[in-house]
Amino acid sequence: MFPQEQHSNAVHRFRIDCTGLCQCGRMNNSKSAINHKRRRPTRIIRCIYVVGFMDLFGVSMIIPLLSHHVKSLGASPTVAGVVGSTYGVLQLFSSTVVGSWSDVVGRRYSLLTCLLLSAFGYGLLGLSTSISLFVLARIPVGLFKHSLSICRALLSDLVSEKERPLVMSYFNAASSVGFILGPVVGGYLTEHEGGFYLSSFVCAAIFLLNAGLVWMLPWSETLNHCVDANANSKTKPSKSYNEVKNSVQQNCSDKNHIRHPNASAVRSQTNRGWGWRDMSVVQSAWRQLTSVWIQIRMVASSDMWDVFLVRLLMALSIMLYYSNFSLAMEERFQLKPKVTGYLISYSSMLGALAGCLVGPVTHLYGNNMSALLLHSTALTCTLIFLYATAPNVWQVLLTSTFFAISTNIGRTCITDLELQRGGAQASGTLIGAGQSVTAVGRVLAPLLSGLAQEVSPCGPPSLGVVLGLLAVGLLFMRTPKWDSKTKLKDKGPKQ
Image (cartoon, rainbow, N blue to C red; front, side):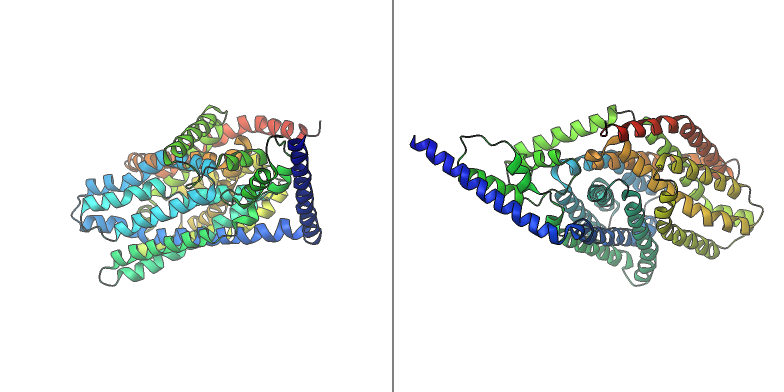
């Protein structure tokens, strides 16, 4: 009888402690029930905006200088083209894998890994005095430069489905501002001796600062109320009071995983202990690879081919619009490269400011992202057609103004639609798969642009119009099915 009495006393003490913890939590929540939902996520969301801004600020310092540097190392135009495509090919295969890996190990570890290895790659780029070392430096960047994708997945975990388009648009706007300001600083540093190497080291330092910011983020604010979850869960009678209490404290102190809409999935990941220090390296790596493979297979077997095809068609269409923009402006309207640069900067600034319009526009559409995507895609296709047939520079300026807005809205819509169709519990895998589809467009766009440019300076945008029309037609056919699935999904929990 004595062991049973000891067990009953242990269980009684555990219930008292859990009751005390829950009551303290309720007292705190009663004082700040609204602030818990608004203030705390807002802090970490704003920090993620800063991470996105600094990320593209550092990258845009280097991008305009890469082709000049590789040619200065003695590479022929063909070799320079092959070297330049290395990054795109690596991104094509690594985007989905790294995104799925972030679903498995958590956003914190995956984001820190990507930032640190990207910093290593850009630092190695600052030491590249030969073509082979240049290629070697691009490998870690091509494999792990997915920090923006993980940030988007993290944002989708932190906010509700209705808030997601607005938060994503603000993140895109902050990143676009960094992409606008970066070339200015990079151009200034290049004027000094060894400017490229200095720019590379500055970019590496920016990524290290980003990693430090991510490390200091208030990750504890994104955790679920794991004490309540464990208190309500079934506990085996054979466990003693100390074992149960230590289990609760261990789960509550685990800050490696963020708050997730699928609470059971997060608790299962937490209980498995997928961390760098919790289990042997071989066992942890095997479980991570197995889980990554399961996530990718689920996305590949899902009925999302239409969403990804729309993304590919529109990515090709937009890239063809920009592919020979400077050359076409010179041949069609005799514009100097300096004036064309001003026009591109003007369009980029509007694209950054367009992030503020996504919230009111989605509210106007009643968060019907499929209808908004259809209309923004049709508008983008129309603007590309007007640009291809523009008789003067003023029409080009007009089309560039609305083109920046429509593409920004469309990019937010397609990402949100992918998360709606695929489920938020695999947001990293879905966003990574979308980036892989965009990488396919980066590989195909230069080839298609070169072939179309053989016909006419307006050939690339004209081909973009054709691809855009295919995307609009596909959306016309598939949007009713998407809307019907969304209605069934919304009615499901009520019944």
